[in-house]
Image 1 (spheres, protein in one colour):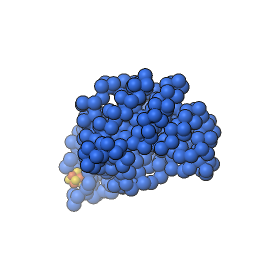
Image 2 (cartoon, rainbow, N blue to C red):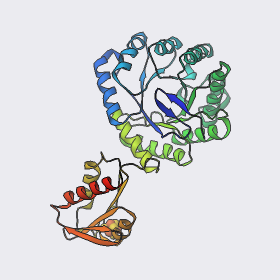
Image 3 (tube, rainbow, N blue to C red):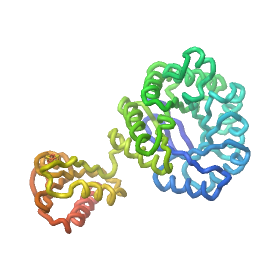
Image 4 (cartoon, rainbow, N blue to C red):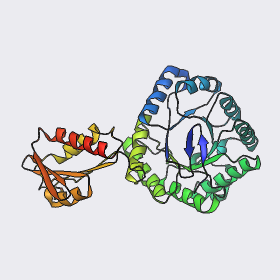
Length: 352
Ligand code: SF4
């Protein structure tokens, strides 16, 4: 098990629930918009939020943003170690550094300041900005180079007496990322530091979700990963929904509604696809673990329903509600959503 690190009041690693992260894409120069986006992300279920601090103005206004939200706020630093020092003074709950573009002397200064303030640092290796010596050794970015870069920079932090570390090593290649994390977890993570996992520059909402689901899914099923960020070229709120869905699909987050549904086929005589979508959307606020099977016909409908809290299938416009393998109710299309609501509310009360 990895060691537990605190980012503000959110624990990462050591068996803590996997924290969902995202990053604002509005600069500090548009402060009101930035605050609006940060609040929206907090409301959507973001546990830890990161913002870019690329210049003096951002470092100066970091404190103002910190006051506006209650989730931990992380300063993302590239190139200039002074911006990290300013962000630490401004109340950053964590610093993310990219060791590929900050000199070791700068990294040491950041570690010393973070140690004094008792906040963690993420050593965030990125395939796009690996150190020159590693690129020379391996010819191009690869899993070994990513893992070695992480190990080298973690050592550098440890040499400063700093152990409050979270590690990441991201590439836009799913395979390279997964191989790097597996290698690091197996051979290099001697300090048992928690791992922040993600596929960097994963792409648009659709393709980025698929790449992230494959990569993060593979790692999570291996038991690797203590906090996740899904990087999407989309509204960052989509990243939160994507992360939640990945955690749900990997069987890690068991809360909320799970709708099992079939693709339908020529046997279907009800609109089960539309019904499944409607139920999923309408009851997305439910946090009690409830499983509903919405199936196009009785062929697999009865079996799937038996594995769920209740099942719905139907024939010729009439909906059948199953519990176990028995039909308990027959309802019309007009009644079905009200009946589903009653069933869900009863289950939610019973499972409280
Ligand atoms: S459950 Fe019925 S409707 Fe759905 S795919 Fe199977 S046979 Fe077709």
